Image 1 (spheres, helix red, strand yellow):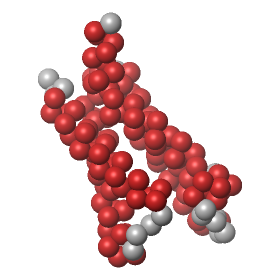
Image 2 (image 1 turned 180 degrees about the vertical axis):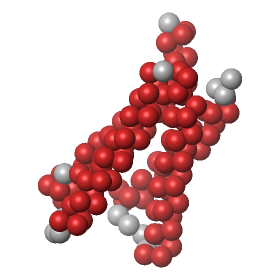
Image 3 (image 1 turned 30 degrees about the vertical axis):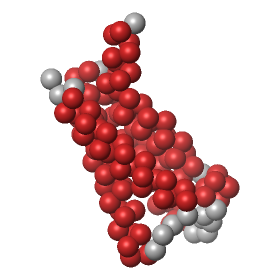
Image 4 (image 1 turned 90 degrees about the vertical axis):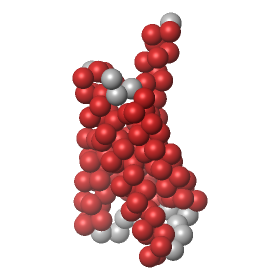
Length: 130
C-alpha cells in the first residue's frame, strides 16, 4: 500500500498534467467543441490546420509523460519536459496578457494551472532526483 501511495505522489505532476492536457488537446482539435467550450470560431482551413497540429503536439508530449509514469528510467525526462511545457505555455500567456490584454476566465485559469504545475514539477524533480 505504501509503495502504491509513493508511486502516486512521485507521478502526481504527470498524472494531473495528463488529465488536463489530453482533454484540452481534443478540444483544440475539434472545431465544434472549441466553439462550445471556449467560444472560439474556426473559420479558416489554416486555423483548423494550426489547431490540429497543436492537438497532436499536446498528445505527443502527453505520450512522453505516460512513458515517464510507466517506465521509471523515463521519469526524469518526462518531468523535465513537463517543466518546459508548462512554464513556456505560462510565459506565452503572460506575454499575451501584457501585449493583448486579459483573456477570459478559462485562459486566466490556464496560466495559473501552468505555473503551479511547472513549479510543482521542479519541486518533484528535486525531491525524486535520485
